[in-house]
Image (tube, rainbow, N blue to C red; front, side, top):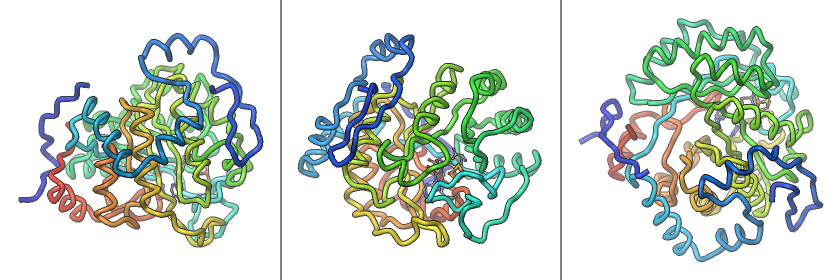
Length: 357
Ligand code: SAM
Ligand code: DTB
Ligand code: SF4
């Protein structure tokens, strides 16, 4: 029997940011969220005041204890055998002015990628139809922009509406967003906006110089205020310390609202980018990061995101046991490859997993 990704089974879901310190690093000031968000954060019944020491204690406990704790919490909020399926499409590839050291689309690095124009609507509709036919429930579109112009926003809105018309949830990632742009996207029916914090505030400065951590937090604030759902996570395996991984999780969990989706990416090392050749991350550190994210943000979807091609099936199985309940599915991420759909279907079958309705 092969798991059919196209017929979702019925799943029942029961379902101190003032400044941050990290052992090895100097103190970095991060503006607190606006006061109006605080009662909302307290009202959701979730913790938003995680200290680094608390997170370290969770992360470093014996592996079996960590996974047991994460899996127990996971079962309180989700069907443990249901995994949400998202498919990615790069709608505007290459030529990005930002200098993110991991990214093949930055103009600062020679990775062989050219600068392309925004895809036309028919191309996007065809890709969305194919994703839906293959079993995806969410379609995520990414653009290699620092920030979209208002004209870009109008064009992307047409794409979002066309994807919605195909019966898919929509997510986009376009870079920094102004408040009015976020409101316009919400009014047009967009479901999620993806904007990652990428790493701890301290390690972030080693990786990106053209955009500040605070600017990322400001975009996330604009997205939340517009009433859009947030998809926000980061990348690990970039040569960061364990404390940087904890610092990223601390930032995510202490946001005024936990992001509804938390993508945890394993760096895809692309030749020509400055991070190509960094030491590979111990896979069990990746699993620990997923488990800790599940404990800190128990009601969020935690996505086992980029980097699955370099993971064994056994490691992916451990990630699902640790509380991951979403994946990127389809043979392409944005510009790099992802596991073959058939391989993913076989993995789901071997693990008894079902696509989430
Ligand atoms: N330009 C927009 C931005 O950065 O906000 C949107 C597109 S950007 C490619 C989306 C996310 O992809 C980044 O925030 C980063 O977390 C992730 N990403 C990019 N290159 C990656 C890589 N080589 N490995 C893993 N994740 C990567
Ligand atoms: C996210 O956190 N990961 C996705 C999505 N959000 C946009 C992107 C992964 C990109 C991997 C490198 C590439 O394919 O270009
Ligand atoms: Fe540009 Fe986004 Fe790539 Fe950074 S991650 S270089 S902002 S496309």
